[in-house]
Image: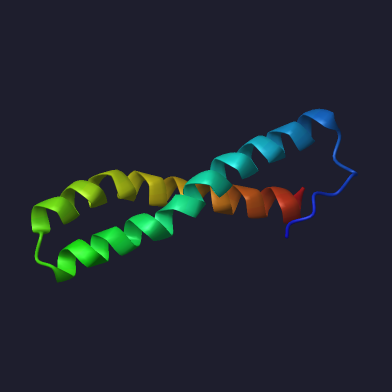
Length: 77
């Protein structure tokens, strides 16, 4: 569990929590979507796989980006 230090002032703490929420919620859905992509690929339903992957890629990229921002904010600020 990530502990947010109490030393952060109000606006910075609010920004950190906002970025953390925009990271946590999509990060919880990415594994399920990945399982759906793999399942449809193994069943040779390539059109369904492409449709799911089309929406999953931006979600995965945003989770990666916000994860790096959260780490930077926690350990460098």
